[in-house]
Every structure is written in C-alpha cells, then in structure tokens.
Amino acid sequence: MSAIALEDIAGTLRTARLSGEPIAAPTETWPALDPEAAFEVQKLNVSHAVANGDRLVGYKLGNIAKVMQDAFGLDQPDYGHLLASSFAYEGTALNRDSFIEPFVELEPAFILGKNLGGKNTTVADVINAVEYAVPAIEIIDSRVKNWAIGLADTLADNGSTGAILLGGTPRRLTDLNLRDTRGVLTFNNREVISGTTGNILGNPLAAVAWLVNRMADYDVKFEAGQVILPGSCLQAVPMKEAGRWSGTFEGWGTIEFDVV
Image 1 (cartoon, rainbow, N blue to C red):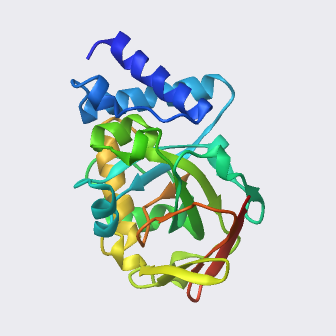
Image 2: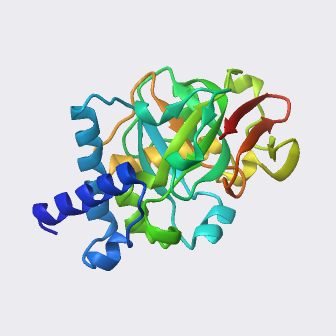
C-alpha cells in the first residue's frame, strides 16, 4: 500500500479514538490492507502519540487463548504497543463513555528486568528477563463498529487496546505457578467468569516468547523496565454499566476498579 493510504488509515483510526465514533473495518474501506501493512499503520499512530508527548512503555499480545479467538472471530493472535496514556490507576473510576464497546480481561503482566528480543527467543530467555509479575486488567476496545474485525483491522487499531490497570502485588516468577493459576472476574461482587493461566498458550511465559519472536520480524526488541501483557486467561466480558469490577488470581492478588 502507498504511504498516503497508510497515513489515511492511521488518521481515520485516530479520529475514531478521539471522537468515540466507531468506523467501518479498515479492510472494508481499504481492501488492500493486509497484516503487514496494518502493523505499519499501528506504528504510525504510536509515533504520532510519542511525538505529541506520550511514551512507549511496553507491548501486548491479544487473542492468544482459544476462547478469545472464538469470541472475536479470529484465528490468529494480535499484538500492539503499550502507551503510557493507556494506563489507569487501580481503585480509581473509569468513565464508560470514554470507550466505544469495551470488554474486561484478566491477565498477568510481566515487568522486564533485562532486555529481551530477537528470533529464536525461548521460554528460558523470557524467565531470565522477567523481574516480576503483577495481576493486571486490560480493557479492550475497538474503533471498528460492532467489533467486525479481521486480523489486519485489529493490528491497525493497535491490538484493540483501551486501558490497562496494574495490580499492587508483585511476585517473582519462582513464587508463582503460572502453568495453572485460577483467575476470576467479578462484577458487583458476583462472579462473572473464571479461567486459568494455562489457557494462555500453555503458560503466559510461552506467550511472551511467541510475542518476542513475532515482533523480531519487525526488528522490535523489548527493553528492561517495559511491561509485557501476554493475553487474557479467560474470555473477555462486556463492560456495559456502572459498578465495581474485581479480578483475582488465587493465591496471588486482586485488582479492582470502578466504572461510572
């Protein structure tokens, strides 16, 4: 695709994010948009955000779990950049009207103590690079009407990122069983859904290794201090009304926020 077309797609998605008005899937308006071109669109908007005062703080993997792929009609994971402006504080209130059609996910978050990157990265490399993990909630949100997305659409839209909240119970990997830790989402003290970290490609460290290898195709490497989200351990739940959300990893920690 031409550079002009890529800029047009990036600008259309920025406008949709700012206005809160969803658009038709980019692949409908620009049929030539493929996943590789879509990632270039993603990078354009990240560069635009950074040039206007934002900061790149990490990367995310999405739709790695089968339940997530089934829910959104995808057969491959997506991935995106994490910008500081997307992070919210635990215990504060989020305005439902700040999103278009949001869903709540529970997942671990990894904070790197060492640089990590390159092809042939293994799970052992990931373990050696991670300094600690915290429970996290990601609110995914699409700028595409009715989440009618294919892989290229969500990649162009930065992996459908909405907001991220990090919990306050950091743990070393040796203190966790990431192969099989149960996670539960509740809304207004009622359990909505549960899952296990084993849903994230067997364990979320393997998902991070997958992400590192995929991003190496774009010459992207992760840096010490960055946050890496490996994907949800359960199917995302619609965030439709005001109330309190709580996500808990058993034996680890809880993270909460309010919606107004």
